[in-house]
Structure formats: structure tokens, C-alpha cells
Amino acid sequence: MRRFEARWGILMALPAILGFVIFTVGPMIASFFFSLTDWQVGGHPTFVGLDNYAALADDELFWKSLSATTYYTLGAVPLTLIVSFAVAMLLNQKVRGLALWRTIFYLPTLVPAIANVVLWIWIFNPDFGLLNSLLRQAGLPTSQWVYSEEMAVPSLIIMSTWGFGNTMVIFLAGLQGVPRHLYEAVSIDGGGPWRRFWHVTLPMMTPTIFYNLVVGVVGTFQVFTQAYVMTEGGPNQATLFYVYYIFRKAFTESEMGYASALAWVLFMIIMVVTFLMFRNARRWVHYEMAGAR
Image (cartoon, rainbow, N blue to C red):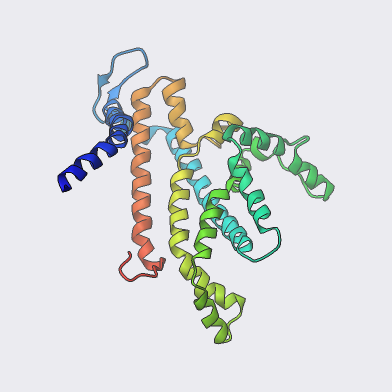
């Protein structure tokens, strides 16, 4: 019976396994091979060893793209976490029309990526955009937003908070899983809202915060749509994000070998950063069950 169940289990899982091998593992192996070659689209790959990786050290745009992506990650991830956590706490209260408010805050997540970018192009327009119109009415100085080299990445960081719905829902689920008796214990000891938040909510939410942190960092390191549709890497390469640079090398300049090397470097960077976050998580992530780490 066990062999029969095992065979059927493997058979049912086979489509997923084949899909993973064919569409994930296969392209990764091919990408690594091409990263060791000089391959122009339409030509034949020429093996060059580690030359593509060595060339990265002297590539100014490589360092520029890595710097812009890191800047975006360091700004967008904390801001999104703070905003989504704050909204989740508000939506965790017992107020009238709660379902409606939850729907309203989640709706931006459902907007297609391209439509979202087109909407923000109008919002950031320095002449008749929504943000500058509000600033003028308030008597405050306006900005060039994404059309300014200094403000381009900060503008996209502000834009990143628009789609915090998924992060908010995960935080909301975590908040609803915090045991009520812990709040009651703090209240009995005379603790107010701040103590309940600091000694109960925050420690119990650290696994959820850590999950959203990892997902956010991995996602922002792969930011692409905003640079591709909104800024095309400008102005003056200020928003030349890493994945957009890979796209440009591969499909604009047809340097597939070099683009594959860039992709593998990004994979290694994300892997190292994720490893460091997991190592550091032992110091601040609290798990309710002993040994859950």
C-alpha cells in the first residue's frame, strides 16, 4: 500500500517537478553556461571563461545600477513595512465599515503594473501633476520628481508604498494571531497601549516582520517596471536599476553572455543578503514555540 501511495504521489507531483526542472533549473543552467561565453544574438557562443565577470569590475554602469538598486531597496523596504504595519494595526481595530476600509487599502495592489506606472507618471508630472498641484495650493515649493536626477529614486520610493496591500494583509493576519490573554496580562499589570505594543505586539509580530522584510528585499532588488516604462533608466542613469540594466544588455545591446553574468551576480548578491538576514534574525525574531527557529 505504501509503494502504491508513493507511486501515485510521485505521479501527481510530476507535472510540478517537470515544470520546475524545465522552466527554472534548465534556464538557470543555460544562463550559467552563456555567462562564460561571448554571445551576440544571432551569432555563435564563444567560450571566454570568467572574462564577463572580470569585466564587471571596470563597468561603471554596473556599479551605477547596483548603487541605484541598493538605494531604492534601503528606502522602499523600510517605508513599505512601516506604512503597511501601521495601516494593518488600524484595520485590526473594531470599527464600523472595517471590511470596506480593508478593501479600499488593498485595491491598489490589483492595479496592473503598467497602469500603475502610467498613473504615477501623471501624479509626478512637474507641470500639471497631482503632487505639484497640491504643493502649489499649500504654498510649498514644487519638485521635478522623477525628472530630476536627485529626486528620481526618492520619487520611486514614495511610489513603492502605493502597492503595500499584500504586505498589509500578511501583517493583519499576524496581528489577528496574537493571543488576547497577553494583552490582558499587560493591562492587569497597569500597562497602557504603548506597553501593550512594545511588549506584546512587536515581539509577537517579529516572525511576520522578518518574512515581509525578506520578501521585500528580494523583490526590490529585482525592480524593473518603473525604470522600463517611466524613466528608461534616467535622468543621467539615476534610475538604471540592476534588472533593467540586464534587460538593456540582453535585448538592446544583444550581449547575452554579459547579461547572463550580470544575472548570476544578482543571484549571488540576493543569496548572500538573504543568508545574512537569516543569520541576524536569531537576535531579534521571537518564535512562540521553543525550537521553532
